[in-house]
Length: 447
Image 1 (tube, helix red, strand yellow):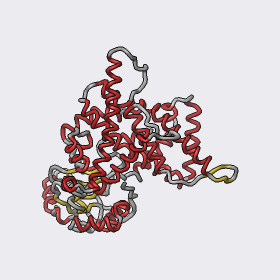
Image 2 (image 1 turned 90 degrees about the vertical axis):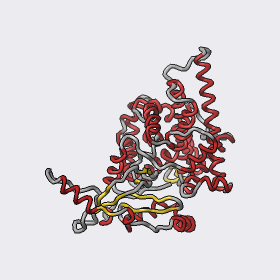
Image 3 (image 1 turned 180 degrees about the horizontal axis):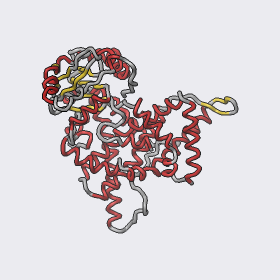
Image 4 (image 1 turned 135 degrees about the horizontal axis):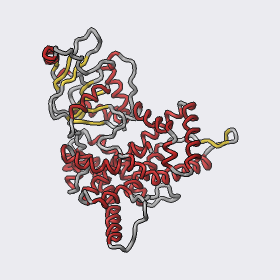
């Protein structure tokens, strides 16, 4: 998991990589100057050109667990754009928002993201359909527009509220039980210091499944089922093995029966098995309702899965693929932003008290309506948005440019504007919580 890097005052990081404005009538001269000042791609600073040596060094020094610090140091040393060779990949890392904006503008309607090869290899070897996380071009846009209606529109998000409120209440009750049983007495109150990561992970997984499948999986029950515990293991294992596999040839590891690949594939197999059972159950429920034997509850939201099945705009295999990937991709993008928000509130107690007071007041006036309570707590929403803007850049957004794009930069006023011709390579952006393709997790976290 990548943590954040706050922009700081540093000459190497304060330069802009956009061309200076050209005065009317000077467009020709401006373009000629741009062309003459463009550097070759090979002149982009890098951390070392041997990807396999770099990868061995990463593993030996444990850099993957502190990747945010490594990137922060590299940005300070090499500037806001640098190359990094890791294993079989060459990636260009971009820091400044103005440069990220330039990259986005170059993409058009069909942005091309770097394929998560471990995930793609699993789908291909297991003959599963690929979801929106693994698609590009017109096919990606078609699926994305359909999923937007069920996940990102305000009307869709508000449908999640009762489901998320249900899970959040169980989450709070679970923490309260911990405080009462494990906490210590201080000033006539009980307090407890703990690492919230495992509890937030369970909350995110339970909430994601409730929103996507329309049913609970029982992670906050007093005795979670073996199936639930196995599912937690599978999601954690899949996420943990994805990072190192990104820099290795997965098909070679598949042929070698490497333990790392076997763990990754086994975890995905269990995740898909879990999803297939929910999709089959949803399909059977729809069949029964269509036959008129059972009527669905009026106004009850049956989850994103039920909505997609009801509309019938995607084949069942694509529904399963997208639901599975959204569930897997939504866990960390819910849990980590919440953890960073709690961290920021803990080190800013005055802000914490203001947020708490506003939430309590809003809830008392909402008469138990979560939607009204959320609308009446702008400080809470602002806290999460600000946290996403500053800290939650943990998910690398990787884009592959299909054409040469010129970015100009300068170290200071004394250094001439220059630029780079860039071939088709992945670009990693330190972006503000947008997720890789569609951030169901960010939306759940904000709600």
